[in-house]
Length: 368
Image (cartoon, rainbow, N blue to C red; front, side):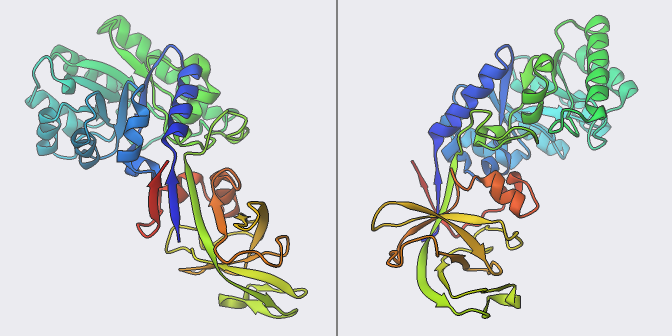
C-alpha cells in the first residue's frame, strides 16, 4: 500500500521554530499548492498560532474560508480579474497589488472600512523581476491607495535568499529598506513591511520587519543551502511509504528494469516496492538514492539502495543488507525521517518543494 502520512504536530513544532526566529514579527504561513502537498484541511488546525495564511489563487483562499479559517488570508498573486477583486471583498481576503490593473480595480471598488481587503500587500520589485512595481511606480501606487483609505504592507521577494552570500540579497534589502523608509516618512508612518520568506527568516534575522512569510520551513525542509533541517530544529511533516510486494535474487551480469540501467555485479537479493513516478516518487534519481526498509518480523530498519530505473508503479531496491527472511509486507520509507525529502530531492536534482507538490492522488492519505 502506498501511504502518505501527515503529522500536524510537526507543522506546529516548525511554526513555533519560526516564531522563535522571528519573535517580533507576525507570521503569514504559506499554504499554497494544497499546503505544499500536505493538504490544506490537515494543515490549518496545526497553524492556529499563525497570524494569517498565504495562498496563490482565489480558489485556495475560498477553500480556506470554507474550512473555517477566520484570520487573515493573503492572496499573494492578487486578484486576476475585477470580478476576483469583488470576490476577495466578499470573502474578506487581503490581496497583493503588483501591477496597474490591480491598482485600478482597488481604486474603482473600495471595500468597507472594516473589511480585511482594505489591507493591501503592495509588491515592490527589488530584483526578482517577476511581479511588482518599480521604485517610481511603488511611490505613486502607495500614495493613491493611502489616499483611498487602504492600509499598506510593502512586500517584496528574495531571488537568492537560500544563499546568504549572494550579492543580490544585500541590494534587495537596501532597496526595500530605502523605499519603506521613504513611504513611512512621506505618506504614512503606519505602512508596514514584509521581506522574508523561509530562507530570509533563517539568513537575515535583522530584516524580518513586521510580517514574515514562511513556506517550506513549516513542512520540515531546510530552506537554505548551508544548514540541514535537523540543524534548524525542524521536523518532517510527511512520511511517504510503500510496501515490498515481491522478492527475488538477480544473478550476476543481469540488468534490471527499463533501459537496463543497472546491472548486478554479483548475485543480488532485490525487492519490488509498490510505488513509482505515478505516485510522485521521482523517475530520474541518482545511484546514491536509498530507502529505509522496516522489517515487520523484527521491527528493525535497513538502509537499501534504489537500483534500476524508477517505473510508473514500482521501484527495485537492493535488500542485501536485510535478513534473507525479510517479510513481504515490510514497510518501505521513501522519505520521512530517513531519507529526508531534502535528500531525495538532491538525488533527483531538484528541490523538496517540487517533490511534495507533485504527489499524485493515488497514495492513501492518513493523518497522525
